[in-house]
Image (cartoon, rainbow, N blue to C red; front, side, top):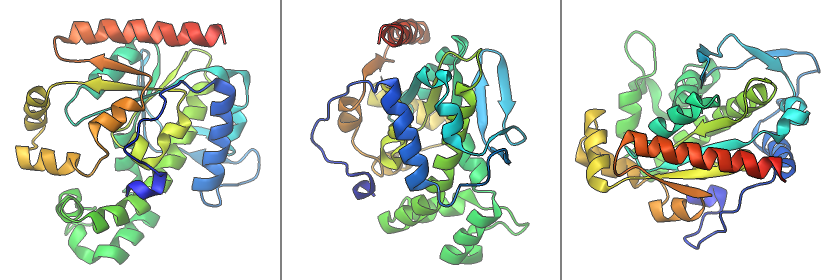
Length: 280
């Protein structure tokens, strides 16, 4: 799985991406990973997923944007930061993202995007071709539990699932970034994605923050979400190491004490990012 994005265990410099470079990366990403997504100018597309901001939560299943993703990214609003959030399972990524939403940022929930994508007919056709009816519930919907039991115990099957899910997810995430960037009231966009580096979505970000927390705290939070210790460890082993993720990030957020302490760090780093943007 890691070979797809050229990951190695050597440390990479966690320098923030300048906004002009980020806009270029958006174009490269959409050209290389979004197959045949080139409808004529003016064509409106539906963007499945979820965006959260200080102004509330809105579903984007019925929100439209310009067909060419780069159109919005190449406007003056493309100078807005795109902040990726990573960390181990149960580290507190959602809490950090919520703190950024309170500051007015649009937050893209990659899990919500994935849930929308897996219900698409084309994706379901590929899932059925790979695993047959056993990954579908009797009444028709995809049985995510059945898929999880298959892929989290077999790296080859997990890679197959990722090859089905990640391209359309990347398409929608890029669309959501473009949509958020075009809104004057949104100062920055946040991408909350556990597999940000594995999927190559860090290419869409100007900065990436790592949320750090102890194994004990993370295990407790995972258990509260219904993941026992074995399932928690099994899923985490499918991702690149936490040390590798941390080394590739712009800053680390310490979530070992309290929510208020995490929120304070988020505010500090967020304003630092905005200050760097204003002076770049």
